[in-house]
Image (tube, rainbow, N blue to C red; front, side, top):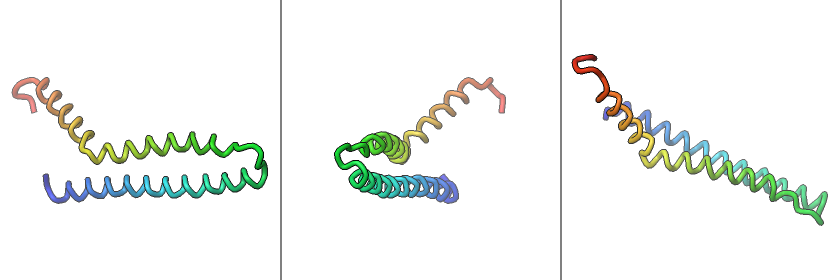
Length: 94
């Protein structure tokens, strides 16, 4: 693999990880604010876990997508598909 390709892949992965980090920080800040609003407006009823739970599911999926892609799974799948397509190509065709 050429250096430029490695740099491109590294930048993409770093961007994905940074995006997840921003998502995590916003998740914490917004849900902390929702907790405070909940405690000040309706202290007898806790509604803040509902948006927290839904967002936590989304954040978890985002994290899995980011950190599983770093495992090289996607690249291996692309290489496998390329091999399959090249094996189906007619002999001598390019």
